Length: 228
Image (tube, rainbow, N blue to C red; front, side, top):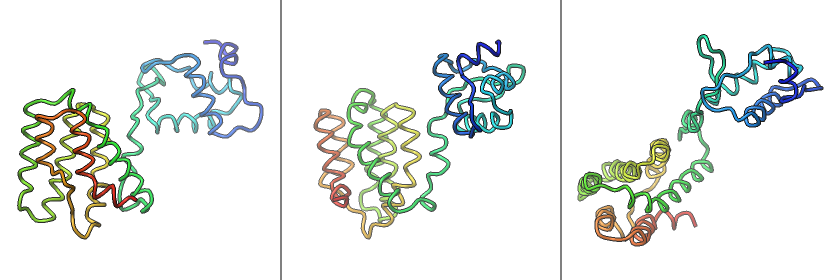
C-alpha cells in the first residue's frame, strides 16, 4: 500500500499529537475503509508515515486498541482487526470490593431493569428441560436458611438468563452476580415479593409473556421499592 494513498485516508496530524488523537484517527480509518475482523492492517511504518508521527506514538495508540481487543499481532500476517471482547474490560473491574456504593447501586438497578425485560426471550427459547431445572432450584428454597436462600436467589435468576439463550446477556448476568449477591448480603433480611420463584415457574409454564412481566415486577417489588 502506498504512503500517498494512506495519507489520503488518514491525513497527517500537524501538531504534536497525543496517543488519544492517533487512536481516534485510526478508529475513523478502520470505519472509513470498512475493515472486518481478520483483515490485515497497514504496517506500522506506513501508518506512522501517513499520520506524520513517530512509531512510538503510533505504538502507544495501537496498544490501546489491543487492550480493547480490537487488533492483535499474528505471526506472518502482522496486525489484524479482531472481533472485540465487548465485556472484557468491564469484567476485569466489576468487583464489589473496588466499586463505590453509587456505582454498585447503579449496576444493581441495571440488573433489575434487565430482568424486567427478559420475558420475550424466555418465551421464545424456553424448553421443558430448562423449566424443570428452574423449578428444581425454586423448590430448594422452601424452609431454607437465609444464606442458602441467597445462593438460590442468585442461581434462579442466573438460570433465567441461561434459558434466554443470549450468550452476551448470559455472560453479562454472570458478571453481575457478585454485585447482586453483595447487595443482598447488605439486607437485614432477604425479602420476597408477593410472587415467589415457584410462582414464576408456574407462570412460565402456563402463562403469557404479559403474565410473566407482571409476575416478575411483583417478585422484584421489595427491591424496586427500596430504590424509591
